[in-house]
Length: 387
Image 1 (cartoon, helix red, strand yellow):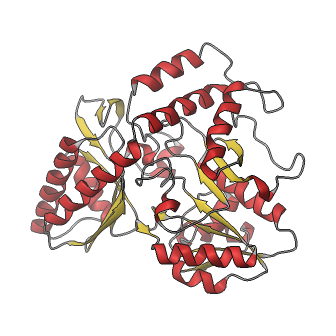
Image 2: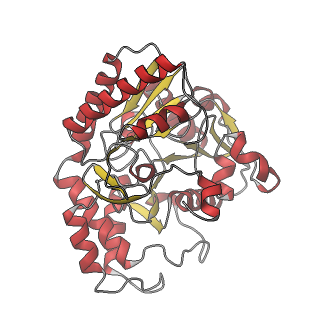
């Protein structure tokens, strides 16, 4: 990575140039099993024929017409996304962080006079100012603390007892990704939902990484006892193209007139691809396949029986392995052996396979992971230098 971006993100030392299905190639023609997938955005896999075809067709039409004009592609996508919460309303934007920002503004607009916003310890919702206010990690927050919104952070199981009639909203990830891959228990999810309903606080589910069938259902909320009023979606929604969406129960109301907007949000080009992606998700029952393949991956990782593995957890195709050695060094060593992954905190390695992955990919990943741990345990541990 060149220029200023290398300072922001850190270099992985690899230049990826192409991909198909669950595999990618670098500029030296070396192949990798891709369980990174653009931070999970490439949910359907690389170069999916149906999405490539739709993108090519869409590129011949309007790329963007602006929110003030009606768009058949945007309307079709809004109808499909609204169905996620029954008769839901939808705001389409360009990223997960923008979906969170929209949900935050919407919650304040719908609950005037209230002042408390609650979120979870270990939670991550993005790096724009509103989203960063909701995110917990002090490393991300500290340099910008003076401009962040006041948010109270608690462990998920503590939140039901903290909700009162002054609470605007509770923001929660059904499965915490960046925070170490921690699924919310069904009991906690139900308790949070009940407390929000009793107090009139809005429950906002951040399904940016966990949604779109990745965890074994359209929404991971369905599997964790959460009954959200608002859902935020993004990664995978258009197969890796930039898009985000905030979806909320229609009876709650709406933004005030001109209370929010986006120049590129809901553009025709990406909306058409997103509609095609949702069609694939329904027709191929990818959610059920994700549940099955995720179980296979977690079982195989546990069966390795390596001393450095403290826990294996996750749902569907969102999985984490907690280690007693630094995760960044493991991620770097896995990459050298041909498996792409990412860290989820200082000692958790995260695996985000796409729907294109199969049992052979899972077997290769398990084998590479075991060989890597053998190497690192023999050498005395992993470096914690950025990967």
